Image (cartoon, rainbow, N blue to C red; front, side, top):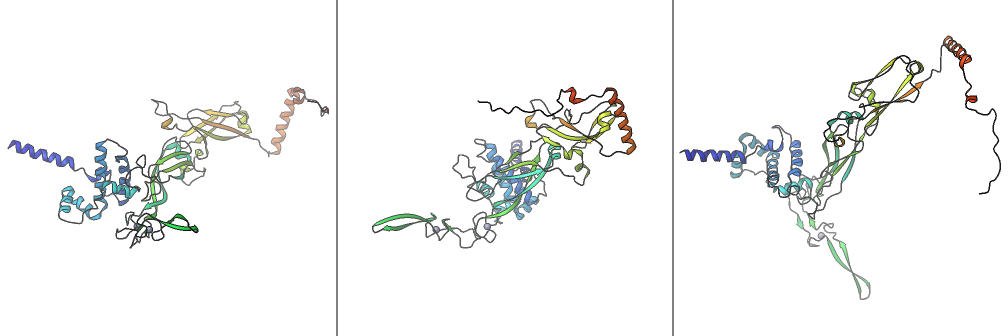
Length: 417
Ligand SMILES: [Zn+2]
Ligand SMILES: [Zn+2]
């Protein structure tokens, strides 16, 4: 009796082990949309693909399970059964002759997403399609604060209506004119008795080697469609301007090749004032060079000369950097003041080992504006003050520097070399 109970418990454990929740497996919530399910499949099937994890049994196992979970959840009917009755329900449904979930071979399914034969190009003799480059621009503040965002690209995708066959009913026949080779050999007579064999494209099948009686109405038999795809973009704090972010196998798809990579060039947008407060900080107009930031601050003549002023600069995350001079502290025009650690955050890839956070510097370039209009009385008073002190201790700079009073005549000789 005890033995039987133990065996029974053992079986239960096996069932529990064998049947991992499909939603959990794909990292999805119960109410996941079709788009989310596809997205999850795209990500996980690449991660666990056996070609990427050679010799790793558990990855292979995951790859198969991810395909199984996808197949069950992407079909409305099987998803409903799974939601209500779980794995057992699906098993029964299959045995009861209900329309089975698509039950793709996991590699087949993979090839429907990424083209080719379901394997990666590298070394496997599989052709890899061209990489695709796009430029994505985000404001400087996103480089400073980090941001999770999205971007959309239009690309060529395998037609999901015909699963890349180009045929409405799934039937694709070998061309009977060229025997599937896509070319025909023609004999051309160049001169009497002199022949040349020429290869010409088969015009019956357009060189494809295959013919379709009923072309897919969605893609017109071309097997591919133009599609907009949205990708997540994680702008990491301090990422360098122009950094390239690789999205593996997300370039144009075709049944004839494994999709190449989508490469994103991340650049900063031109600074511009937005409507929201966080889009209107001084930091919006910081200029960036590597890890350092640059800002031009304007001082009046009085401030530059006599001191006694403060300025609050709002940084890219809203915190304030205060600049100030006490009475009597002079700031010469074009002086650059360096404020340490108020530059860009250092990207984690550039951080030295054991350092969690570091920042570049903020360079403040001072510009001094002289008044070009003055109250008459004020001008008069300034003038008399200047005159008073000029008479007392003024200097003639020409004399001080030993400059001649008139022009100097140059010797007009033609020296021989
Ligand atoms: Zn189609
Ligand atoms: Zn042909």
